Image (cartoon, rainbow, N blue to C red; front, top):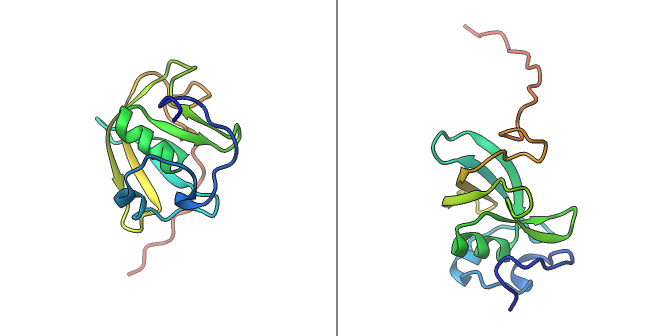
Length: 137
C-alpha cells in the first residue's frame, strides 16, 4: 500500500471499485458521481467562511479522516494532493460531515495561509450581480 500522501495517478473509477482503505460503513453512505467522486465543501472551522470546493474519492476521504490533513483528488492532474504540500497553505482538518443525501462532504479546517491557488484567502472572491425580486404583499 502506498504512503498516505503518495500520489496515485489515473482517473478514479466509480464507487468502491477503486482500491481504498475507507471504512466500508462510511463508503456505503456515499453517493458518488459517475467518476467516483464526492464534492467536498471546505470551510474555516472558526468562522464558518466557505474557503473552497474540491473533490474526494473514497481513498482521499480515508486519508483525510486518518491523517487530519485535507487530501483531495485533482481531476486536472489525475492524482491525490494534500492541501499545502507544495504551497505551504495547509488545511488541518477539525471535522468532516456528510450531508443528508450522501453526495457532499463539509470539511471544517484550520486554514494556514491562502485556501485559493490565486493567493486569495477563499476561492469565492468574485461577487456576481443579483437582481432582487420585488417583495410580494
